[in-house]
Image (cartoon, rainbow, N blue to C red; front, side):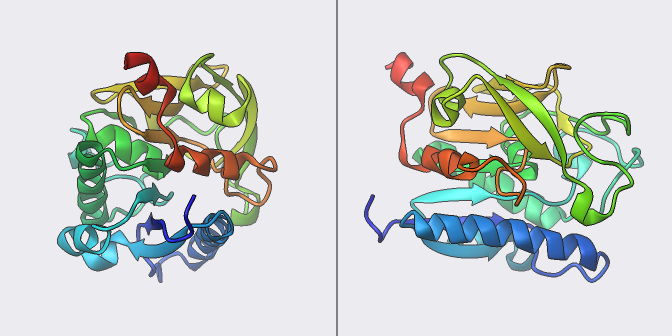
Length: 248
């Protein structure tokens, strides 16, 4: 892969005065993603969606060869037909939601490789008309509820569909992951395939049937994630999905 290829790493915001502990941990995750992407030969542009606004976000990422949408706060319910006031509701950044949704739609139109992580995985789904389970409950495998931020990541298994692009990337049909989310995909968006699930059935990985778009609900960029998992998923940005090859 030529070193000149450009990667837009898109986060929600660079400013969270209301929650500095969470913000600091998000910076660790984004920093690890950027560092590995640069090691793999990408020229990285770090972009904060809420700080720019939708139009400026699209303009700044227009020349990107690939995109990663990182984790962050809950998507505002109006973007998927939901209601506010649900349990565990976080702060919302509607401008980031709008911009990132537009980014997914443009990536689909242009066939720009895109990887969504946690919130980014959900943004892909919402952009394509899918919906969100607003709260999974406190007794799930997905998050260490009530733990300090540095201990919030939970470890659990994900079953990956044989023959899927995600299985090919990870080289396995069962993987251990680190996650810290209280929401999940409900109804799938148009063109998306659910290719990873928890043993309990929640959707943990998606891929588009014809475009190089992949999403994972977990955090491969966490310091405690299995070695090589983030690099394997970043490889999705430089490949044609298995589903697309089969369709061809």
